[in-house]
Image (cartoon, rainbow, N blue to C red; front, side, top):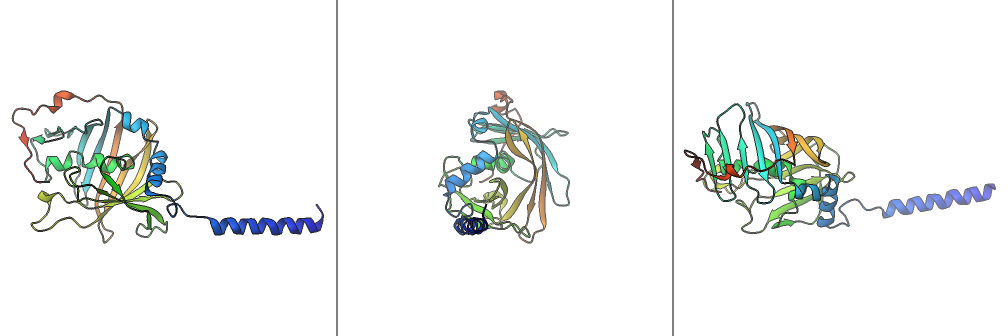
Length: 265
């Protein structure tokens, strides 16, 4: 190529690159919240397999900082969100039929009704963002502690009457390049867990530390919950994920001697 043309070609290339850089728009700046969460769901394997699964089941061990954790085997029916939980190594059991929760030999400091779908929600947030009654804010950006990444943030709130605690909220932290969920900020408004006159806990930040792939879906295998001062509040390990197990309908009958939870959401 003649020297003059090479110079012209380089100049045009520089102008084009400069124009592209000046026109580049970060994720979330022009996309709607719905478009962003759709991309997040796809980054976690899509909605179809998750929604059509008969159940979601896993084994978890949730441990408060400095304390021994409680290991539980969770099975949730996808169509009606009924659930039962066993606690290996103990004689505790929990059932939830969508209206009431009951327990046998309960020894934990939390109401069974509160725990029934707690970890199911934390672990399935990439898909639950599309549940009926969820309200999404306009996208913003935010950082996680010392992480320099500018995450796309979307606040999830709920219409009145949705679930036990419609005043809860979640702020999703979505990676701007991978579209994957990195963390969430949340509060708890379950009345029986709060001191009188207090409407919610302080915000906590849950960071997903490790992931795996099951049935084509990207699911967490460990998360850490932090206080506002960045200290660790709790950790959770998750294993034995399945989206294929059947749901034992017999577990929806309240066993003789079981205690129905009368706590106030």
